[in-house]
Length: 335
Image 1 (cartoon, rainbow, N blue to C red):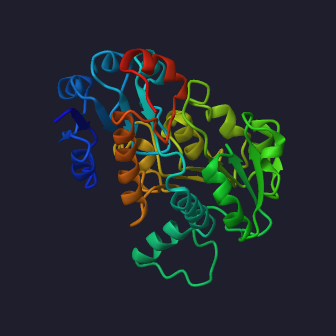
Image 2 (image 1 turned 90 degrees about the horizontal axis):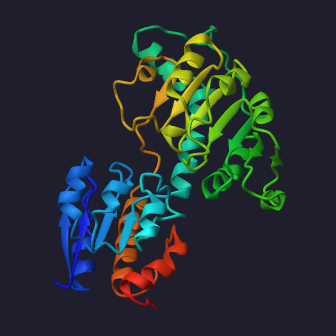
Image 3 (image 1 turned 60 degrees about the horizontal axis):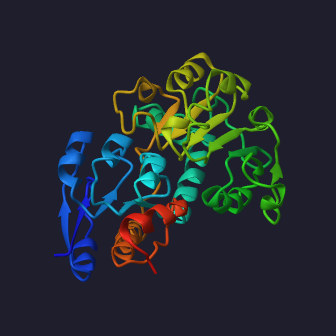
């Protein structure tokens, strides 16, 4: 075999063995849970398939002596030190338009669940209490969606896919994203808000959709939650690291906000988090990406990009095209 490709994620990839065999690559699947495991398994790999579970700090990347490409199974790639990869001539890939419908549908489902108090009412009914039509059924208000405001923090592919679904329920949609131009919202019938605090004050549902970067880490803290309505809900289907978890716990227990619906927390899948013990929290364990069609597509495309790079071609889901010069200097010219 000319190449070695390591799948370091916990997930098997049914496309990898055959697709990589065709280009003369050995495929190794070993879930790696630490830096040392990654270095031991992938130090001599020509390509690596990654997931949001394992991390690729500079220390690891410096030890990947033959690596030309790290292909991440997902939209985000904050677990990879992209600057370090670029310095070492390594292409970083992701699937930027992956699971847009799935995550936007999941977000809408969480909004509906909060608005109609589905989880709380289900818990009460299964506990043997007949509530019928005698309010108050549960703690917290229940309002119809039509006429309420959904605030989207970030306006990339997924929130743009969400807009028309939310508007179908009669929600007014406002957007805060300092990294896009006002023309980016043309055609979506949304209002662009200049300040995050303004969006927080106006919204009945605040939904996070930004990438996790140094600038956005813990962008939701005590000050931000205090600016939200006490009847408002916080929705996060993006990254847990956007939120100060202690601040969110305080907001939920002190009544700064009515509740939260979270597909992601920080640390990821931390089932011991005190936030998950609260009755006004819904947690779906980073499942928003999944459908019977999304997972096969994700797996195929991450392998496809690895195969392209190892065959001397540029990838499709390229996260760091600025690597091109260093890549050529280290590995030779690609097509």
